[in-house]
Length: 241
Image (cartoon, rainbow, N blue to C red; front, side, top):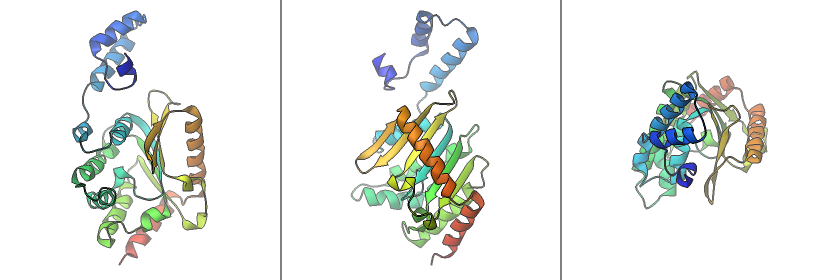
C-alpha cells in the first residue's frame, strides 16, 4: 500500500476490487470506472523506455502531463520541452550534458509533442519571457525553424502562446520557470513543476499552488496578447541572419 500511495507501484484490478469491498464501494458504475483506471495505469507509457537516460523527475512530469486537463507553463530561458524541435532540443541538452550524448533525451523531449494533438489533448497556455525567443540556441539555422514551430503550434485550438516583452520590466516570472498542471478528475487538483539550479521539484502543496497560479495570472496580464505574440515571434525570426 505504501508503494502504491507513493506512486512507485500501480494497483492491480484484483487488489482494487478488494479495497473497494473494504471501503464499501458498491456502485456498479463507479466500480467499473475505477477498475478501468487501474487497468490504464498499469500500461507503461512510451516515455518509460527512456528511464536509463532521462531524469526521473522529467518522466514523472510526462506522467502528469498525460493525465492533465490543462497545462500552464512559464519559461525564462528556453522554449518549453514539449514545443522544441529536435535540433533545438539537442543544442540545449548538449549545453547541460557536454560529455554525454544528448540524442536520447532530445528524442524524448520532441516525442512529447504528440500530447498536443492527441484526442482529448489538454489545454496548453505557454508564456515565454522575450529572451526565450531572442536567444540563439544552436545558432540562426536552429533557431529560425524553432520559432516557426512556435508559430505553427500556436494555431492549434488547444494551444495559446504569449510573450512577455522586454518593456514589461521586472515581473513575478523573473524568479524562475514553472509549470502548473491541472487534472480533469478534480477542478481544484494541481501540481507544480519547478526547474531550479539544484534540480527539479514537483509540489502539490496548496500554498505553493495558490502562489504560482496568482503569479501566472499576473504574468499573463503584462504579456502581449496571442496575436501580438505570434507577430513578435515572426518578427524575431525574420531578423535572424
